[in-house]
Structures are given as structure tokens and as C-alpha cells.
Image (cartoon, rainbow, N blue to C red; front, side, top):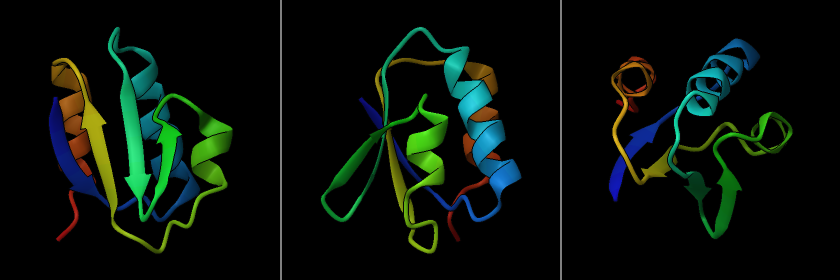
Length: 75
């Protein structure tokens, strides 16, 4: 399992993240507080509190997905 922290404030960022996640063959979870959302669920991610730093846990490797994670890395 790998883990990174990101911030998805805009709807376009959520859409880009989900599109990249959908291309992956492994599971992706997005977590904050005690909430865990499937990283491939657009509705789930749009409904979350996007003011928080999100923890992405993923169980595989994909170069395009890693690029999106780096783009939205939490400062």
C-alpha cells in the first residue's frame, strides 16, 4: 500500500482525479477523519468535505495516476 496526501478543491480537480483513478486496475481509497471513499466514485468525492487534506491510499502503481497525485499534492 502506498499513501499520499492531496487537496482537491475544484470540481475539475475531482473529475481529473477520478478519470485517472478509473484507468487503474487496483483499489484506491480517499480518506479524511474517519470517512473512507472509493477513489473511483465521482459522486462520492464530489460529496466530501474538500476543505480538508485528503489521504489517498492505493494498492498498485500507475505512472499517469502518480502524475495526478503529484499535481494535487498537499503543501
